[in-house]
Length: 373
Ligand code: KG4
Ligand code: ZN
Image 1 (cartoon, rainbow, N blue to C red):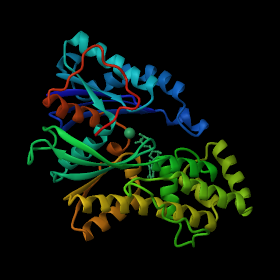
Image 2 (cartoon, rainbow, N blue to C red):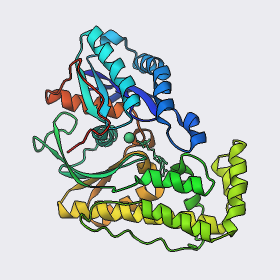
Image 3 (tube, rainbow, N blue to C red):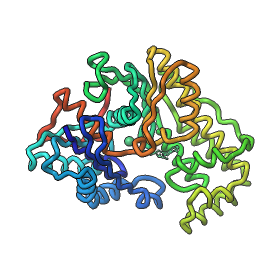
Image 4 (cartoon, rainbow, N blue to C red):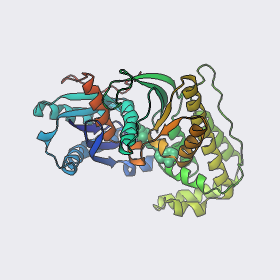
């Protein structure tokens, strides 16, 4: 069964064809980063407009890369939410129109379920299969949430069965990726913040932390996250330390000239800034890893899945590998391309939903705060 997946929930217009929920025949992503960069974050109106411009060529390209015509598609899977309403509506309207005119089923997909399936897609490529029940951390610019993932039919293949989700914890304020983006912005390091801070932290070469950024203790659910206090702690430290001002100004000028590459920004960072970036990343990584492992332990899970844009972080990956190994757990990540928003994960999730009998009709609407579990 070849499913065309369509994703437009945030700032990526994406289309992909996936066979039987496992084999990626094509995956095309048009990123809008260059459009939103100068605003330091996603501007919803601009996102919708750009999705409108991109949706048709992106779907066409996905079909062409899969060597298919529209009539070869067996079903259409589309992101219903969560996300930006205007952005979601572009993908939903196009998906609906295609499904109606081709007389093929339309399958509504929760974006977060897509991120879970991104891990199964990657595992399948490597001939592996995560054992269920599992704990999945979805960590991106919009989400930081922990789920227990079980199969309705124990022992069944995750791609072909209905998965059951239970939310274990989530961020009470900012998402982890959002904290990366805000800290990068206040340090004059551009947008998005994750990739550059990741590389600068790796280049810090043991520069001492100029400030201690402590672990966030949570009242109530110990599996909840919070990143806004951390971002504020960095902000106050930078404000209270006048030495940072000059280098931040110099980097902002470099960014304005389009010099935003790691190699261009690294020489403009003092050892103190590198130490600060490293301390910030240590704190985020420690927090994500500790809570996820603690959830896995509480549920006696056999594996851990990590997905979403921040799952591309090198220190997060290395720390999870190391800690999971010590705890006797297998850990699974998508490749970088499948970590960030894409439509292959939507097509894969659509397959398992279709097998569970879930289809939509022409009344399907966007749900900006669609919940999972
Ligand atoms: O999943 P994604 O593409 O979009 C959302 O659904 O948000 O994630 C984008 C987020 C951004 O906040 C970006 O800064 C962060 O993921 N990110 C990273 C890394 N690469 C992307 N954060 C930390 N380390 C990275 N290497
Ligand atoms: Zn996402």
